[in-house]
Length: 120
Length: 115
Image (cartoon, rainbow over the protein chains, first blue to last red):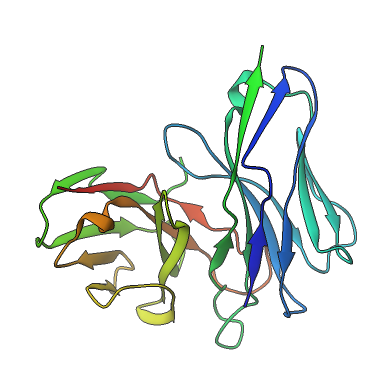
């Protein structure tokens, strides 16, 4: 069974500083995907970044980068130049390999989340 | 805007009642996933449909059921509601499993309150 662990219930960062949110995972599948989602206080789930298990390079999307260490089974999210609007809950998630012969993607398994607070 | 719509946004009902949550996936997406987010259980996968067929089941109670219609919209039916069913219910959609990330696009959620 897949498992995602986020060990930081809460993190604080000063505006304009960088912050790293930790995520470790466990799976026996050789093919998987790792995602980070942001959930602001309004409740919606916003996709931030994706890393495939076979990707050689770390994923980057604007101020977000994913520090993927496959041997250690970690997929930490790095947010550079934090902004007040980054204050939210952040979820790490893992997608199963495709099911039913590759015709559909599998479910997401989520970690417990990390609440990030950005101070001015 | 993710392109996934969910109705209603809020739902308040009493114990023992039955409700239906509706979801329309992004145009072209064949897969629909339902998730439940509660304070004690976190975000949990309930069920997945692909092109009208049930594809995977998670921690879905027997009192809950879902279906995906020919136009690809999906409904989650919750019956004999209990206080513990109060949660935020998300629908998400993704494209088919032929390359790509399999990113799931989430709807805004339906917040269910059972009194």
